[in-house]
Length: 500
Image 1 (cartoon, one colour):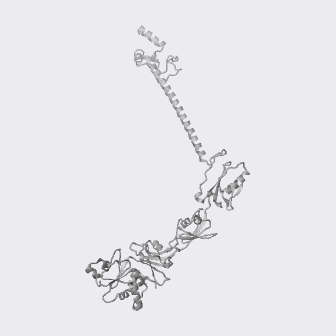
Image 2 (cartoon, rainbow, N blue to C red):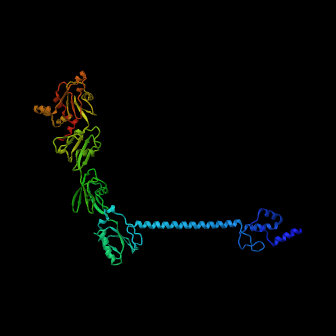
């Protein structure tokens, strides 16, 4: 070893080089690796360890080297993290403050009459306005459940059912009579009793449950019997609980029996006042059977049905039977009544006259026959020809298959043909009755052969529903032809169903 290298090695032993600290450049590391290979592990150790004011170098002396760039960056990062943490905590505290303030403000606005003595939120009381009408006017009865919240005694029960004797037990005051009182009367009584036990009592009173009422329905319902319904229930609610009305029921009205008397009420919605429609405890509803009539003919659901006892008109019977069919003749509806000796022809069309007095209300056992729209051609026997509208006499005769004796065609209009309902075959042998019938029928003569010669459309008279077109044979006259085919003609016109 030369003298210079020995001096340099001794100097490095006495005073640490800059390479011993963490702040060493790449050139110094390269120079040290060449000139001082033994100090390289010590320098790497100093670079890897963290700076500390009490750290010592490889000679055991306190290090006086300044902090490295990495150590300063770590300190600055830690300070930044602490500042961010403080900002987040401050933001959360401010947000929590605003939330608490909003909640307290909503509670103040939601309370009806907040006072300084109100220490906690009042529990809600169920809204029973739709159950008992007006809760302030409801009279308490056994079975009702009242709710009482005493602010000074929050541990007490809040619900108190009214016993069968009309009272309930409240711990501070004992038995409290409640049956027969309204909420205002009960509140005044409780204030008087609680004032004897505590100073300035505050409580809240309400109705939690209402005892159901028991009603009875009898008569034409599917399931007659007694039912428990809530207060304020109507007659329709009771009928619905019983399964509805039967087919024989009078759906227009019912009889309501109460302790104060009997009341007749309509069963249609909105057909009566609320006082009569709302039921009370102990009410009895009786549904009368309707008037039984039979509807046949051109209706959708013919058969035996029931109509109202007071407004059972023939049109109401047709509606109950499903309504008339498109080909039904409403101007010739025939009414058969056992108490009458003859049939009654009714015009139920919109343009028809007013019904006779005896037909404005149907009776038990009446039969309504709705015939189809047709005309009857009498030639070697009566034959019904369906009408669709707009037919003339030639169309009807051709549809009936008649091609002879067209020069002596007789037409009897439907309004005059009703006289045939009471005619008997022997009446044609009586000259007086025959002349009267000839005058009542008012026959119209038509010669169709002239139409074929002149082609005059005025000769083709129109045919309406119920008209009779008679094309006689070569021998018999007009009345003789009617007498020959009277019974089948009456059957086609509906007169043959007359109960004699």
